[in-house]
Length: 228
Image 1 (tube, rainbow, N blue to C red):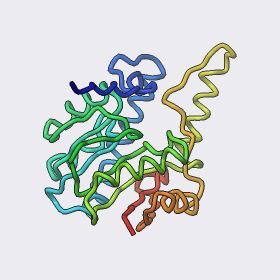
Image 2 (image 1 turned 90 degrees about the horizontal axis):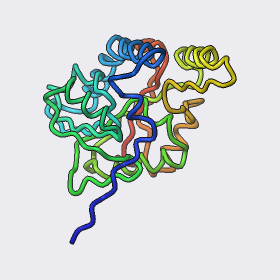
Image 3 (image 1 turned 90 degrees about the vertical axis):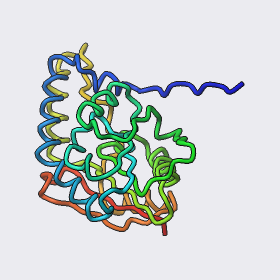
């Protein structure tokens, strides 16, 4: 008799992706959606296009609601993975062409014999410790073929959006009894390229490309990572 695997713990992400969010959470959700569609969709399509041929099988490892994939969902064969069931429901609504959706934890990634041409995510790594990030890199690369790559969008510690969000949190929590969090903590924002190179090397990988651009208001760096 096989033992059923426990469901991944979503650590607050199901509430973040809840369609019933109200007040400040709802406003933040709307603003984040606008930013994704205006500034991220095109940049993601550009970087995936530089690294993967049309029709490639890709794993979106931490897919969220999937708004960022609306320009690429017909171009690639995408499997969307997330720890939040709410996020996966939103993803399927935004991208009905998705090959598959997987409810799983990036820290405990087990996809059987599935192998992809590449994997990517956006706004995921900063929510984990350095040791966890190394593990996530290793897990993502374990389901990518030998010459495959990872494309990672990772925000800066001094990004305009980060500073604005901190100010917003201070305003929301000016009452000592308040504890409003618009999303789970960002504990590993980028502070330097050297920081990222060191983490990638710990995972036994190579940082092939590190790009910063006005295209997304200098909010996120794009990393292209491969095996040595």
